[in-house]
Length: 501
Image (tube, rainbow, N blue to C red):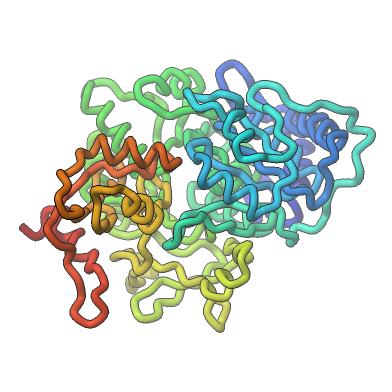
């Protein structure tokens, strides 16, 4: 898919960076505080990091896991690994022992890059507990070496070089296999949907370790516009960086929209970011009401899309779409993406779809006989070709763009001595997209635990903070189907979302 500046999304990620550095060597790409990575400086510095990694024993096919916040160093490390043809296994910084340990074991990671102690969590101590191999800190220092010692860069963009992680309906995260080609296709789709110009300034305020990190990086390289890196997104703290760099495109997920809107309402006469013209994102349900409130009160466009770790770019709203279409749908499919509705389920195939999972059994289950990915999401296509999502088949909660396995939380709740049965559901939430609600019955003779007691115990079990229940309901019995006795979660969602008293 060619862009307006003559670059295309073929080849490898490193080849795309080389083309951008050649075309606009001084063009800004990544901005953080007073640090700037241009096309030329990113290429040059990433080569030195690649040489340092190569001296450590990293080469083509070496699996390197990294759990780092959104920083210039993280971008440099990731591109350096692309230069070497290594297999990257990014882990979002909020993951803890259970998820990180599983990812390291399942991927066979030979190295792990960590930030040391970050936001109160000692990643070094966690790495020791897990017996991780090849641990090195990469928060503000990176390996360095002589680029003249490097082997030739990789040329096969179809090789699996990325293992991203997503929670499914089972307890352990699933390793999603991506290639440079799939991520290049996703980034090209994003660039085409947002239609940025070289005068725009974007932002990456979500974890760069998300599959959206390299996807957004591809969009920057294709279109030649920069983005501000935000290590931790919070308002009003992040506003100074947005204002200083003149951000014109921001977003990430529904939670970001809500936070910007709340800031606007705190001071209705002042725009939080005067240069902002567009909010864009995906990864969580977006209530139509929120869309209209954002566009009306903030005076910006809002383009929401649909993606998942397995397919980062599926659909996206277009600047040409009417407001009612943007508010009520997820947009049209990206170029080359085919969507098929089978018994209400959204299935898809296309250039941005992953190559499967680390576990072959999961791959076989996820794809149908025609090669369409079973998304587990319910929806329909409108006459205009826009996709509307109506629900989910799979038992996954999406909170602030993060997939949470209900089964994983339930399994840990069942270890609580005072809980007889537990069912975890996602409830609609204007800020988070969904919140995590635990509905439990009590063991005989026990008192009802408080939410704080439950979450403290789950923390001790090693559950990541973003998966902790935010609501606890105690009931005499869980609703069950007559035939198989399966918990009827739709009844719990209806009851506690307020639609049924």
